[in-house]
Image 1 (cartoon, helix red, strand yellow):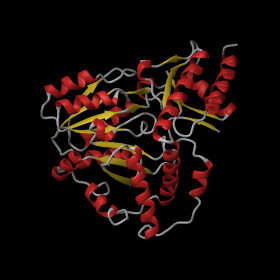
Image 2 (cartoon, helix red, strand yellow):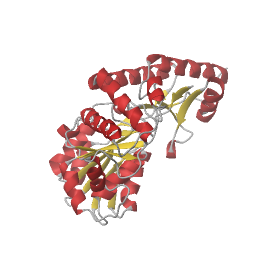
Image 3 (cartoon, one colour):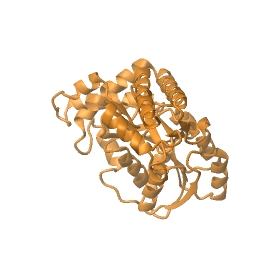
Image 4 (cartoon, rainbow, N blue to C red):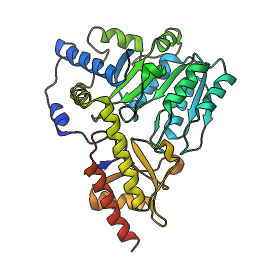
Length: 360
């Protein structure tokens, strides 16, 4: 199967194999050593000296933990939204009582850092800023460095970034750019199964946490940090996913972060080139084209859902469809994780055969 969706991703065989290992005592020294290695290597991967916390959950669980640990009911929140996942984190904040002001950008466009700066000047009491780095629903990667600079230059608000699908696919300098909470998840470019959310947490975010009035239990940061210092987790962790993440991080750092970023950029460029050759058009502003997923309008007269169905049934090729208002209008081709040029070539060779049939 050629799995070309923006997560979960195909997992390398050696990472799959290590998950077959027998369970261990998650309160014992062996697990403590694995977790310590994971946290150390995640700090390198996140380019941060901040605390790293892990939760057995989806990426959305990690985002919920960011909200409930930093935003109190009634707090003023600015959410910069340009797609379905931007909408999701804004809903999370509103669900827990945040006073959320959504600043919406057109789907397919990049978030304008100058607009971010102006909105913060207009709302000096803002306590938290929500941004999705890579919007998988539109294939757009927002200019995070410029956005973060605008936030830090105009506010002391906690900057919470959904980096679930962006981490490793492009540079994200947590400390240098002043990002307070960055959230990612194991099933994306880390090339592991779903099950572990990871967060980096700054001193500013911890100060917000100390004053946060929102109830939390499973996702309590302070409790999780206390157990981490003992080499444990508050609740039963996804031990097999920890095995996978431990090995995956060693492979990633052996390759080198810069090389990982460059590989994702190279594969993304190949995807766009192959798509254009077959008559597809980019959805959105190509200046902000994602290194994780490419969103495409099909050639004139081609039904995107019929295309996806034929790819799945005839070629064992799984490609994503549109979400929200883009449903039925675009396809999305994922290219994050341990993707090779051959995977992309095979993907578009199959799509080319399908187009020959439907346009004959």
